[in-house]
Length: 290
Image (cartoon, rainbow, N blue to C red; front, top):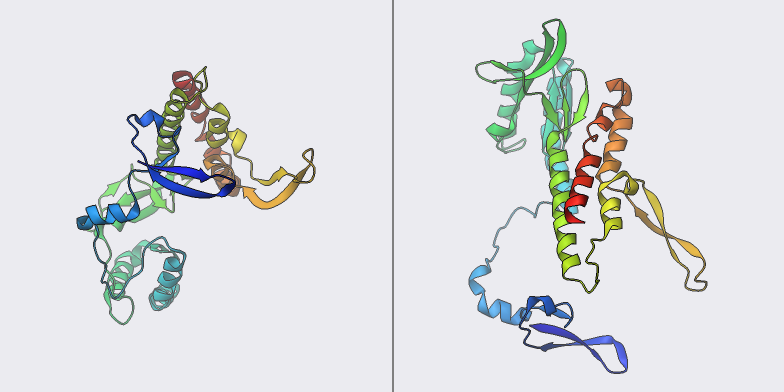
């Protein structure tokens, strides 16, 4: 193992030495920082290194990626916007997710127009993933206005599937957050409890309890309030000064904001009601891992 050591009379500088540690539980106590040096890793694992010789494209997720994607799609946006506007429709694109609202009589024409133009080398020169393309209809069924998925070819309706866009669903009456978002949030909660429990068992704390305050802040309404961060003053330990950093809350902050925006459209706090099981699930995990 590579361990970190301080230089006498110089706390800022560190040196790294090789040391044998027989148990992983001692890693933290011995200040272990790595299994090997960078040079050793490269020498022993040359087969893992794949040289990138691409002459086009940029990594996804970087700040410039979304900007260049929008610039690249300008011609496509202009073509689609003009076409949709001519039929009094609505076109919106966010990154690579686009949505078009039009009358049913224009449905097939719009789909053909999109597929033709997005493959055109002079406009976009892209391919649409068939599984990512969905067609929805909104109409009165059994005296109730509703939205549902239809098969693009056969036009067979699937009343159990509603419109999904940018993490939300719309059934013709209410906008809600996708269930997948809450499932991901709950999986993250379980993972954090397991990690906290593991750290507590291997800590020097005699009672071996998990750190509840961090879990409450991350997964409950206690930590959902967005606020400016204060820090102790270096000149006066009894005073706190403002920083330029914010505590942006947690996933429930996003839920509260979405509920506020959609409240009038939904005629109630139906997005907020989607979280009613969260508090109970949190406390069940707290009982298991306490």
